[in-house]
Image (cartoon, rainbow, N blue to C red):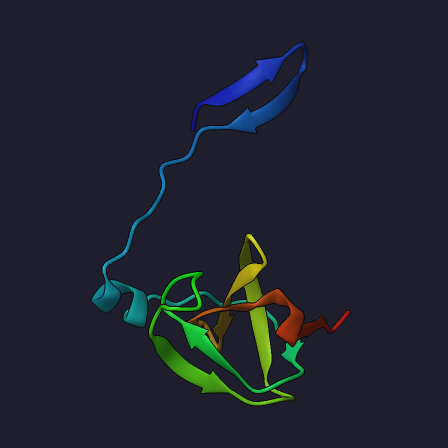
Length: 95
């Protein structure tokens, strides 16, 4: 994989962005330990937008993995499956 070098240390690297269809996203697995817990009932949405359709409802106490942040929204997964985007203030960090 090509990298950007400055002096004798790496500043970053180039990576292709993986864009998944809804069918691929539903079957793609990401295996990591939970990083956050849900603190309020919330619907995980298809995109980081309050008008986007809710994919699944999450209850307080459910543990999820935070994958990315996007303007006050976070993409979460559970047990390796993508759930959707929730508002960041509905989660608390586990560790």
